[in-house]
Image 1: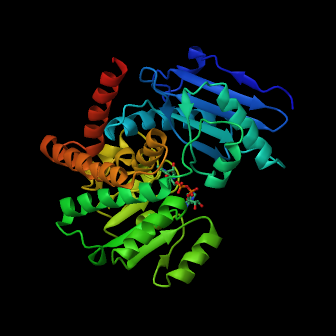
Image 2: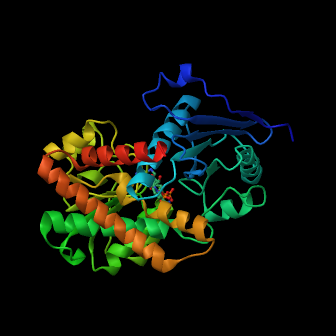
Image 3: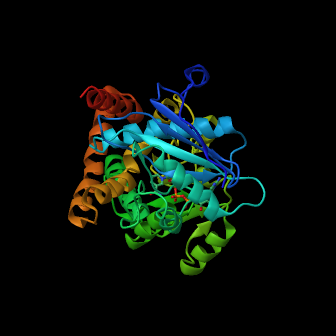
Length: 360
Ligand code: NAD
């Protein structure tokens, strides 16, 4: 195998042009011609000698610039997620550009895992979109800087979303009984499907789903014939109480926000808001938006639990996930008091925690 080219130089001149940069501490470019590895690791903040955490995404990107921007935006979000979850770790994220044409998934991931060793433990990662636990098991042969085998982050993420949902239902309707509410889910992948099961177990039957993966939809309808399937381009327009974006970033943009017919948005997707003004657009429309990085922090909480204790501590995990609801409630009440969107409140709370952590 040709030697991997690992660029660890941060070219501030290039990155400063990107609004997503936000003074990132480190950005690594991991490349290897033979395995077709082309990947970026962005580390937004580091707290002392602690590692920074963030999962790895394997995705089709139209350009390297698009991949870098995604990594930067996601890694900044991870800092806020960690801060609002009461965790001391800085935020980071990695993206692997899915190679064009034929490639060996094993070789690609082996090469990426070896690349992680060069970062000497500054960055610890797990699975995001496009990667599965079996990929982690494969990569574990080549690096120790991975988490997420023992824990089930998707389940923990979905559980955290359901706790957030309960708070939001109480806040808006004073009624947390799922059977009396309607829901739409965009993306029924790892987290979306876990969330769907929680809703159904809680008595929900009025549920709409959409996914670009037709096979997944077929399996879901076979198991739950009462589920209503709609096209991916109209899932956000359904007349429901709660819309749950559980696919990719940017579900809430200038166009879709105008078309929403729900009262609450709560889902797993990271960076649901396309731009900074999107949160105010939602607020003006009277739609309660549960900040993505608060609602979906269950996955991070569970992998940190695994990292700290080396095994699952379910009691601790359940307690930490319940904390998501406490934080969200605080944010919603503050939003009502100050008459600004919950996201603005959350950003301000998160930033002050990040600053405090970085100055230690
Ligand atoms: P996943 O890849 O398993 O699921 C995503 C699903 O969305 C897939 O089924 C995909 O086919 C579908 N999809 C993609 N584009 C779509 C579109 N335009 N319309 C409808 N469906 C579409 O990923 P996941 O792990 O379930 O993560 C989902 C989201 O939640 C991501 O944004 C991820 O970053 C975020 N998230 C995941 C976790 C976790 O624990 N896995 C934790 C926090 C946040």
